[in-house]
Image (cartoon, rainbow, N blue to C red):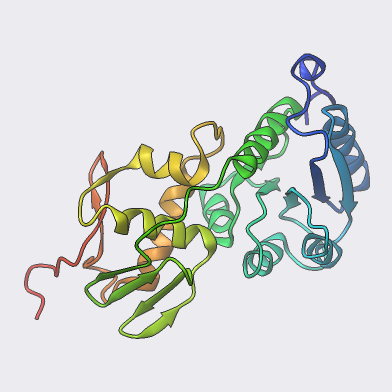
Length: 253
Protein backbone atom coordinates (compact mmCIF):
# COMPACT_ATOMS: atom_id res chain seq x y z
CA UNK A 1 0.00 0.00 0.00
CA UNK A 2 1.27 3.47 -0.79
CA UNK A 3 1.86 6.40 1.52
CA UNK A 4 -0.87 6.97 4.05
CA UNK A 5 -2.96 10.07 3.52
CA UNK A 6 -3.62 12.29 0.50
CA UNK A 7 -1.74 15.60 0.37
CA UNK A 8 -4.43 17.25 -1.76
CA UNK A 9 -7.33 16.16 0.43
CA UNK A 10 -7.22 19.28 2.60
CA UNK A 11 -7.67 21.50 -0.44
CA UNK A 12 -10.51 19.45 -1.93
CA UNK A 13 -12.22 18.73 1.35
CA UNK A 14 -14.45 15.71 1.89
CA UNK A 15 -17.47 15.13 -0.28
CA UNK A 16 -19.65 14.90 2.82
CA UNK A 17 -18.48 15.57 6.37
CA UNK A 18 -21.06 13.06 7.61
CA UNK A 19 -20.12 10.13 5.34
CA UNK A 20 -19.54 6.89 7.24
CA UNK A 21 -17.19 4.21 5.94
CA UNK A 22 -17.27 0.61 7.15
CA UNK A 23 -13.90 -1.10 6.66
CA UNK A 24 -13.96 -4.91 6.91
CA UNK A 25 -10.33 -6.01 7.21
CA UNK A 26 -8.83 -8.69 9.48
CA UNK A 27 -5.23 -7.46 9.27
CA UNK A 28 -5.10 -5.02 12.19
CA UNK A 29 -2.06 -3.04 10.98
CA UNK A 30 -3.41 -2.67 7.47
CA UNK A 31 -6.86 -1.78 8.75
CA UNK A 32 -5.47 1.02 10.90
CA UNK A 33 -3.36 2.37 8.02
CA UNK A 34 -6.32 2.42 5.64
CA UNK A 35 -8.64 3.88 8.28
CA UNK A 36 -6.12 6.62 9.07
CA UNK A 37 -5.98 7.68 5.40
CA UNK A 38 -9.77 7.71 5.10
CA UNK A 39 -10.17 9.74 8.29
CA UNK A 40 -7.58 12.21 6.99
CA UNK A 41 -9.90 12.75 4.04
CA UNK A 42 -12.68 13.75 6.42
CA UNK A 43 -14.78 10.61 6.75
CA UNK A 44 -15.79 8.65 9.81
CA UNK A 45 -14.48 5.06 9.78
CA UNK A 46 -15.58 1.96 11.66
CA UNK A 47 -13.44 -1.18 11.48
CA UNK A 48 -14.82 -4.72 11.51
CA UNK A 49 -12.19 -7.44 11.88
CA UNK A 50 -14.24 -10.38 10.60
CA UNK A 51 -16.79 -11.15 7.91
CA UNK A 52 -19.55 -11.91 10.41
CA UNK A 53 -18.94 -8.68 12.29
CA UNK A 54 -18.76 -6.70 9.04
CA UNK A 55 -22.02 -8.13 7.70
CA UNK A 56 -23.84 -7.41 10.95
CA UNK A 57 -22.58 -3.84 11.02
CA UNK A 58 -23.36 -3.24 7.33
CA UNK A 59 -26.97 -4.30 7.88
CA UNK A 60 -27.39 -2.40 11.16
CA UNK A 61 -29.13 0.96 11.60
CA UNK A 62 -27.81 3.47 10.79
CA UNK A 63 -26.16 1.79 7.82
CA UNK A 64 -22.75 2.91 6.54
CA UNK A 65 -22.59 5.09 3.43
CA UNK A 66 -19.97 2.85 1.81
CA UNK A 67 -18.34 -0.49 2.64
CA UNK A 68 -14.69 -1.36 1.98
CA UNK A 69 -14.47 -5.15 2.11
CA UNK A 70 -11.39 -7.37 2.07
CA UNK A 71 -11.96 -10.60 0.13
CA UNK A 72 -9.62 -12.77 2.19
CA UNK A 73 -11.36 -12.89 5.56
CA UNK A 74 -10.67 -15.83 7.92
CA UNK A 75 -14.22 -16.65 9.05
CA UNK A 76 -16.79 -15.68 6.43
CA UNK A 77 -15.25 -14.97 3.01
CA UNK A 78 -15.66 -11.56 1.43
CA UNK A 79 -17.61 -12.98 -1.52
CA UNK A 80 -20.16 -14.54 0.84
CA UNK A 81 -20.43 -11.30 2.81
CA UNK A 82 -21.02 -9.35 -0.42
CA UNK A 83 -23.73 -11.73 -1.61
CA UNK A 84 -25.53 -11.65 1.73
CA UNK A 85 -25.29 -7.87 1.80
CA UNK A 86 -26.71 -7.51 -1.71
CA UNK A 87 -29.81 -9.48 -0.75
CA UNK A 88 -31.08 -6.52 1.26
CA UNK A 89 -28.83 -3.51 0.66
CA UNK A 90 -27.51 -1.45 -2.25
CA UNK A 91 -24.80 0.29 -0.20
CA UNK A 92 -21.75 1.06 -2.40
CA UNK A 93 -19.20 -1.72 -2.02
CA UNK A 94 -15.47 -1.52 -2.74
CA UNK A 95 -13.62 -4.83 -2.62
CA UNK A 96 -9.96 -5.28 -1.70
CA UNK A 97 -7.94 -8.36 -2.56
CA UNK A 98 -4.37 -9.57 -2.80
CA UNK A 99 -5.22 -11.53 -5.96
CA UNK A 100 -4.97 -9.83 -9.35
CA UNK A 101 -6.42 -12.48 -11.67
CA UNK A 102 -9.31 -11.43 -13.88
CA UNK A 103 -11.39 -14.35 -12.60
CA UNK A 104 -11.18 -12.96 -9.06
CA UNK A 105 -12.50 -9.62 -10.25
CA UNK A 106 -15.35 -11.32 -12.07
CA UNK A 107 -16.27 -13.25 -8.93
CA UNK A 108 -16.18 -10.01 -6.94
CA UNK A 109 -18.40 -8.13 -9.37
CA UNK A 110 -20.83 -11.04 -9.62
CA UNK A 111 -21.11 -11.00 -5.83
CA UNK A 112 -22.22 -7.36 -6.02
CA UNK A 113 -19.08 -5.23 -5.76
CA UNK A 114 -19.24 -1.76 -7.29
CA UNK A 115 -15.48 -1.42 -7.57
CA UNK A 116 -12.32 -3.42 -6.98
CA UNK A 117 -8.76 -2.67 -5.83
CA UNK A 118 -5.83 -5.08 -5.83
CA UNK A 119 -3.26 -4.98 -3.03
CA UNK A 120 -0.84 -3.34 -2.81
CA UNK A 121 -2.53 -0.07 -3.76
CA UNK A 122 -1.86 3.61 -3.20
CA UNK A 123 -4.19 5.19 -0.67
CA UNK A 124 -4.73 8.17 -2.98
CA UNK A 125 -6.37 5.81 -5.49
CA UNK A 126 -8.51 4.29 -2.73
CA UNK A 127 -9.70 7.76 -1.71
CA UNK A 128 -10.53 8.75 -5.29
CA UNK A 129 -12.64 5.63 -5.72
CA UNK A 130 -14.39 6.15 -2.38
CA UNK A 131 -15.29 9.71 -3.36
CA UNK A 132 -16.65 8.44 -6.66
CA UNK A 133 -18.86 5.85 -4.95
CA UNK A 134 -20.13 8.38 -2.41
CA UNK A 135 -20.81 10.96 -5.14
CA UNK A 136 -22.95 8.46 -7.01
CA UNK A 137 -24.85 7.56 -3.85
CA UNK A 138 -25.51 11.23 -3.14
CA UNK A 139 -26.73 11.98 -6.68
CA UNK A 140 -30.44 12.84 -7.01
CA UNK A 141 -32.67 9.87 -7.70
CA UNK A 142 -34.36 9.89 -11.12
CA UNK A 143 -37.95 11.08 -11.27
CA UNK A 144 -40.63 8.39 -10.94
CA UNK A 145 -41.20 6.52 -14.19
CA UNK A 146 -44.76 6.98 -15.51
CA UNK A 147 -44.87 3.54 -17.16
CA UNK A 148 -44.87 0.86 -14.47
CA UNK A 149 -44.94 -2.34 -16.53
CA UNK A 150 -43.05 -3.28 -19.69
CA UNK A 151 -43.65 -6.61 -21.42
CA UNK A 152 -41.01 -8.07 -23.75
CA UNK A 153 -41.91 -11.55 -24.88
CA UNK A 154 -42.13 -13.70 -21.75
CA UNK A 155 -40.36 -11.02 -19.70
CA UNK A 156 -42.39 -8.60 -17.62
CA UNK A 157 -40.74 -5.79 -15.68
CA UNK A 158 -42.70 -3.89 -13.04
CA UNK A 159 -40.92 -0.69 -11.98
CA UNK A 160 -43.27 0.02 -9.06
CA UNK A 161 -42.62 -3.40 -7.51
CA UNK A 162 -39.09 -3.57 -8.95
CA UNK A 163 -39.89 -7.10 -10.02
CA UNK A 164 -39.09 -9.27 -13.03
CA UNK A 165 -41.21 -12.23 -14.04
CA UNK A 166 -40.35 -14.70 -16.79
CA UNK A 167 -43.27 -16.86 -17.91
CA UNK A 168 -45.12 -15.64 -14.78
CA UNK A 169 -42.27 -16.86 -12.57
CA UNK A 170 -40.62 -14.26 -10.33
CA UNK A 171 -36.88 -14.04 -11.04
CA UNK A 172 -34.81 -12.53 -8.20
CA UNK A 173 -32.67 -9.58 -9.27
CA UNK A 174 -30.29 -7.34 -7.40
CA UNK A 175 -31.09 -3.62 -7.40
CA UNK A 176 -28.45 -2.94 -10.03
CA UNK A 177 -29.53 -5.85 -12.24
CA UNK A 178 -33.08 -4.49 -12.26
CA UNK A 179 -31.85 -0.95 -13.03
CA UNK A 180 -29.88 -2.19 -16.04
CA UNK A 181 -32.80 -4.23 -17.37
CA UNK A 182 -35.27 -1.39 -16.88
CA UNK A 183 -32.98 1.07 -18.65
CA UNK A 184 -32.75 -1.25 -21.65
CA UNK A 185 -36.47 -2.03 -21.57
CA UNK A 186 -37.33 1.67 -21.71
CA UNK A 187 -35.50 1.91 -25.03
CA UNK A 188 -38.28 -0.24 -26.57
CA UNK A 189 -35.97 -2.41 -28.64
CA UNK A 190 -33.47 0.31 -29.58
CA UNK A 191 -29.78 -0.19 -28.88
CA UNK A 192 -28.47 1.70 -25.85
CA UNK A 193 -24.78 2.68 -26.07
CA UNK A 194 -22.54 0.95 -23.56
CA UNK A 195 -21.27 4.27 -22.18
CA UNK A 196 -24.85 5.47 -21.67
CA UNK A 197 -25.71 2.33 -19.72
CA UNK A 198 -22.62 2.64 -17.55
CA UNK A 199 -23.13 6.36 -16.84
CA UNK A 200 -26.80 5.87 -15.98
CA UNK A 201 -26.12 3.05 -13.52
CA UNK A 202 -22.73 3.95 -12.02
CA UNK A 203 -22.61 7.70 -12.75
CA UNK A 204 -20.46 9.64 -15.21
CA UNK A 205 -17.93 10.50 -12.48
CA UNK A 206 -17.26 6.84 -11.57
CA UNK A 207 -13.55 6.02 -11.88
CA UNK A 208 -13.55 2.28 -11.18
CA UNK A 209 -13.45 -0.80 -13.39
CA UNK A 210 -15.96 -0.61 -16.27
CA UNK A 211 -15.81 -4.38 -16.68
CA UNK A 212 -18.35 -4.51 -13.88
CA UNK A 213 -21.02 -3.87 -16.52
CA UNK A 214 -19.90 -6.92 -18.52
CA UNK A 215 -20.26 -9.08 -15.44
CA UNK A 216 -23.76 -7.78 -14.74
CA UNK A 217 -24.83 -8.38 -18.36
CA UNK A 218 -23.53 -11.95 -18.11
CA UNK A 219 -25.37 -12.52 -14.82
CA UNK A 220 -28.64 -11.10 -16.16
CA UNK A 221 -28.43 -13.35 -19.21
CA UNK A 222 -28.12 -16.40 -17.00
CA UNK A 223 -31.38 -15.40 -15.34
CA UNK A 224 -33.52 -14.47 -18.35
CA UNK A 225 -32.31 -16.41 -21.38
CA UNK A 226 -34.08 -19.73 -22.09
CA UNK A 227 -31.01 -20.85 -24.07
CA UNK A 228 -27.69 -19.45 -22.83
CA UNK A 229 -25.94 -20.34 -26.09
CA UNK A 230 -28.35 -18.34 -28.28
CA UNK A 231 -29.58 -15.06 -26.86
CA UNK A 232 -33.25 -14.27 -27.36
CA UNK A 233 -33.67 -11.16 -25.19
CA UNK A 234 -30.44 -9.44 -24.19
CA UNK A 235 -28.39 -8.72 -27.31
CA UNK A 236 -24.91 -7.22 -27.64
CA UNK A 237 -24.29 -4.85 -30.53
CA UNK A 238 -20.58 -5.26 -31.04
CA UNK A 239 -18.49 -2.20 -30.12
CA UNK A 240 -21.61 -0.15 -29.43
CA UNK A 241 -24.03 -1.29 -26.75
CA UNK A 242 -26.94 -3.49 -25.74
CA UNK A 243 -30.52 -4.10 -26.85
CA UNK A 244 -33.39 -5.73 -24.96
CA UNK A 245 -35.89 -7.17 -27.42
CA UNK A 246 -37.79 -10.39 -28.12
CA UNK A 247 -35.83 -11.71 -31.09
CA UNK A 248 -35.82 -15.52 -31.29
CA UNK A 249 -32.54 -16.88 -32.67
CA UNK A 250 -32.62 -18.17 -36.23
CA UNK A 251 -33.88 -21.73 -36.28
CA UNK A 252 -35.67 -21.43 -32.96
CA UNK A 253 -39.05 -23.16 -32.92
